Image 1 (cartoon, rainbow, N blue to C red):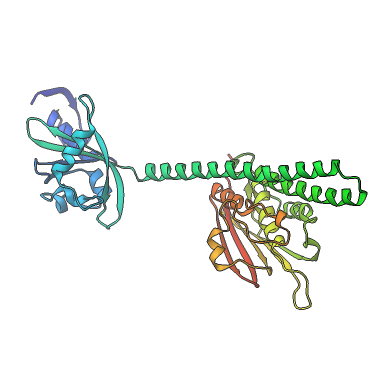
Image 2 (cartoon, rainbow, N blue to C red):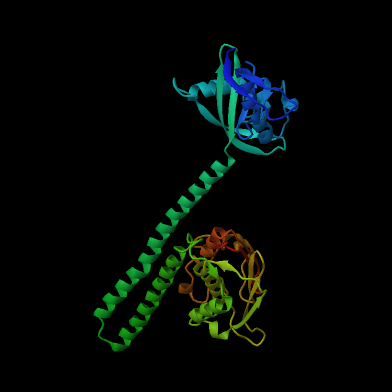
Length: 377
């Protein structure tokens, strides 16, 4: 082994100055790697060395795995592949100039599985194998989330175009009928239907506009004035059918300031409160509809609860209410576009918050929303 013409003085008075040779330097580097996994095996796949990265990734110490087959660390779709199969797979995936890599499902000492990218190199002329691995759980999760959002966007565009086309077609048909109608009474009836059709298109267009807010998480964070924000929301919703019959109870607790994007918080409040109004029950002797809105300001963020005594949500639909374009029957079909709660969930996720829902048919629904502060830079 050649000696590197490099000397390093160890700054500890008890240790002498020493010359580092290649072997010692490579071993130091090998043992110090804490992220990537590097495993040395013999030609049969029995583990000879095990670095810190392997210990951190698999949860085994070197003493626990020395002499064991590398196959104990992996699981295939049809069981544990042999070491020779892995070597052959790696050679198949490689070309003359690059090491071939492939993905394996690996097993942690706790029994949990995770994906890892693997490269196997033969160390000539020793006949030993160096196995280099990297846990790609985060990368895989990110790729899966990206695929999910891409499918969601495709569905969003398709459904939006389809749903917008319906009222436009109806409006055109009504306009053609009005043009050929001579009776003033019939014209007024057709105008009423046309107005209703336009309102349906307007509701959908407003939903699409709200959906565009989702990615504005960090834009213009401000101290939120909930009294003003809730007042503005209720003023905008007062024309909805049934709003005048509902008793709104508003309570704000806590002296902490809450900082976030006011447009996003407004969209969350408007959609949740609008949902409570749309699914309210009419006034009767034994029933007085209410919507209870509470805002609790805490040091780390806020908790908002919106509780009503309305129609409630069927048990089989609880897990579907946040899906895009999912709609339950309302008093007025055109009032709902199937985007409100989907937008709420996406905004809250974007703000690193959580939303929970409890509901019983005929009793009412309770939404609980938790959102942390956005730090002001």
